[in-house]
Image 1 (cartoon, rainbow, N blue to C red):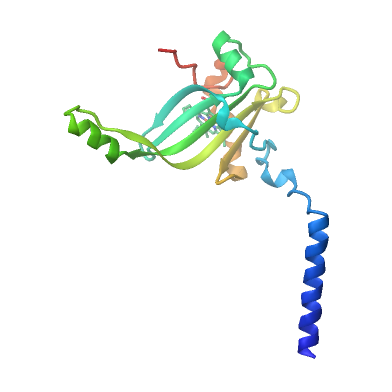
Image 2 (cartoon, protein in one colour; image 1 turned 135 degrees about the vertical axis):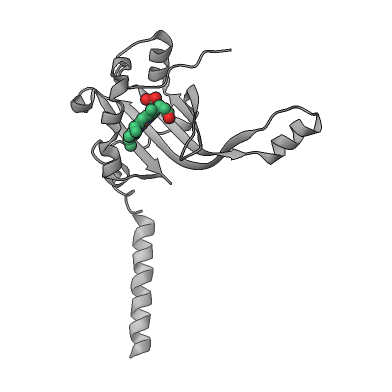
Length: 181
Ligand code: HEC
């Protein structure tokens, strides 16, 4: 009896596999991967956007941060266009700021009085996405914060826009375009 039951369970599992192979399950609904409140998903290809600037966070946390912009954001940055036009997107990638002993050894070996620290573990990535029709209550910006590829809490997202208010005269973006050497 047990054997027969197990056989039929196995058969059912096989059938299920066959069905899935023919009709791959649809990708997980987008909403699960979207930020709370704003519904922003991770923009494709953001890792290839251009550099706006870099920053270091010190104090309770010690992080290295880079701010990147898509082409629309970069154009607005370079030309000083404010408010940013719809379609502008800004990413901020945050890493731990790790001392780099390997680099230090190189400097030491030639008596250069330098110490090196470099991007360590990824901490999170944040986005600001301009869509004035979709986000009229936050000056046209949609906000999103992802850790390990998953959106962070609603509570965290409640704080984004209000904390960016001091930069209202710069269309709520703190970072300025770093000068080219
Ligand atoms: C405590 C205040 C505070 C909160 C809360 C906050 N930010 Fe920011 N944010 C800043 C400051 C200050 C900067 C500039 C310094 C830096 O990059 O560390 C910044 C920078 C950014 C940048 C780079 C563009 C810019 O404005 O310079 C993005 C993108 C960003 N924040 C997204 C978010 C998102 C998304 C949230 C909510 C999940 C959020 N922020 C919450 C203060 C805040």
